[in-house]
Image 1 (cartoon, each protein chain N blue to C red):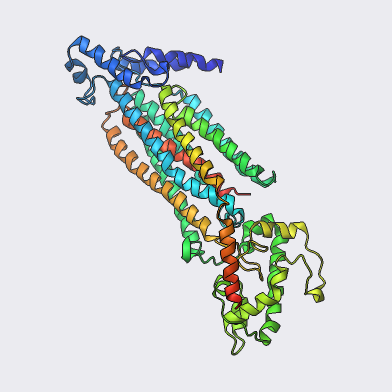
Image 2 (tube, rainbow over the protein chains, first blue to last red):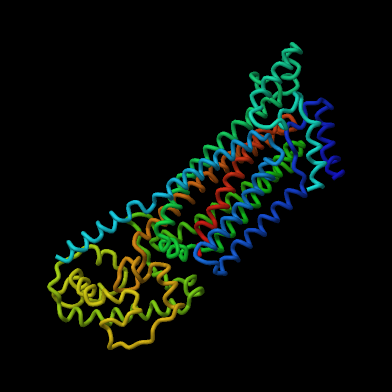
Length: 130
Length: 380
């Protein structure tokens, strides 16, 4: 860890010792590459897992879990949310919350019109028979 | 976890005003005020602005300027998430309603190209995050290099996307009424590789249906035209039957429909008892039914075809990847602009907001692709 502190030192020196340096967290290089490595590994994993049959919804769930882990990595490290103000985290989660609300509301009534559609199809078929 | 602690501990040594960062939510406005008050106490604005040529006159300190911009970009990203939410919603609802359409259509997408694009975008995300670090540490040359790599990755992404789009345009895989695929799903290498038995079985069904057509046409049914079946039928049967003199396409198709309707899945021998063939195995049937090629979801019950409304997938595909692609193009434009700014060495520890905000936007674009890739390419 110590060497990272020394990496940031020159910048401090450039800033002239004034205390208005370092407006935000600086990502260490090793962490950037570690995150990229993990993301690439997870990409390989999500592609290779498609060759296994995990039940009707199993593959979708696994794919979405992996995607969410990747998203969490990107958001917390590449997007600095791990160190950022918690208010930004709340903002981000608010959007996710509304996304989930939106999707779940829409999905709940997806079958509502199936009967009408089927009735229409049946009527259409009858018309064609005549 | 423990080795991350020193890194966190390092942060407090930043900042002019008391850092509101660790106070938690809602402190943002308070933070700005703190800075303002702290400043008024000093009574003089000029030294800070003189020392920071990139500090806008309406901000008191670089910290305030940076925090305001950061809040702004996060609010923008929030609207972006909700913007894409509409498309994700359309996708989710349609996939829940018509899973066979998605199973059918995913065979037309090249997983390798999609995975390659994912990797390209992830690498560009790394260089974007690295560029933020470079800007913070005044590493001007590395900053330029990382921006250039980011732009190069973005262009590679668009190039691969272009190759994919051109392929789809050529194959008639277009949304809406222009949807007219030139290939049947079971003829695709991706399908044959995964389900060789099912592909063969579909061919077999097709041949059998063609054979059946001939007698059906010979005794022309009195059926009157029905638009739906013929218009939708992709199989070669209509062209074949059309050769018979005096029999139009539509009546022929209708006749076929009447003869062959009950054995849609071909699992029931039904009236075709003369054909005593082996009952198809699960491996032969299941992939075809799942993809809506045969069975109740198929567009055409008589011959192996495709699911009804298969074009909706391609509407989803083109809108989602298209909107994402537009975001990548916008990102390229912003990165080019920043490259010019970086060339003038304007970025440093007190002024790296533009790089940081653009990188955040870029990561969000990456984030959306992280979800698009499995949803569009990796359907099981």
